[in-house]
Image (cartoon, rainbow, N blue to C red; front, side):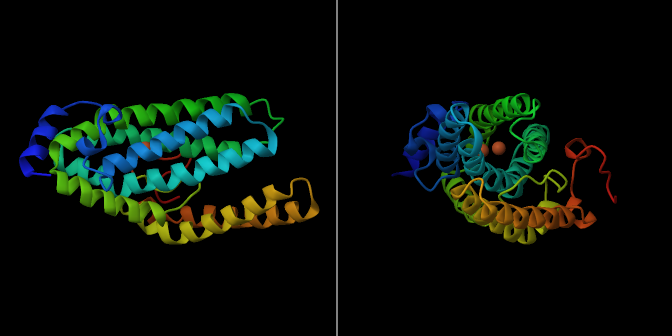
Length: 256
Ligand SMILES: [Fe+2]
Ligand SMILES: [Fe+2]
């Protein structure tokens, strides 16, 4: 496609939500905008499924959501939002708002992980989680990404797509509410937390295949132990470097 076509497309798509643009307008399959929208569509399907499931089946859907959402958001925080802060005058305020949404998601999932299915707080926490995840998608698709699209050339949107994808495939997959939502803290935390999280995922999926058995509870204990190890890693002060005070987990000031 010609450079003139790309320029015209960028003009026409000014401020149009990325939900309403064609794949070509978003920069093709490699573009970060297309990749984002694909993940958001997948999330929407999983959230609808979550509403219709209970018990171990719901735990399985939640695990699928965590594996989609946390690496996705981690890669946004490490690669995309720093670019937005550089290229947009109000990038600081725009990205802080979505970082606050991401922080709330991390805190809600941490609460959910400590709850039994019989806990009466579970339903409101789950409902709020679904609400924040949907708000995050709308803020990104309707506001942040159209602004990023206007500020960057098509090749830059495609290059960002590659960087975001590489990070997304190697990022932590669990809630980490203590770790910074910004570099350098979150980037430093990535390697140890990714290893621990992905080991936990493998164990938890195995336990879900044989619910209620002794083997399942032994596997779950091992997963919980890895979860405690991850919690110790994310509390290292170095992992909180770069944090904005508004996304700090309550009760965890810098250096504690
Ligand atoms: Fe997103
Ligand atoms: Fe997000």
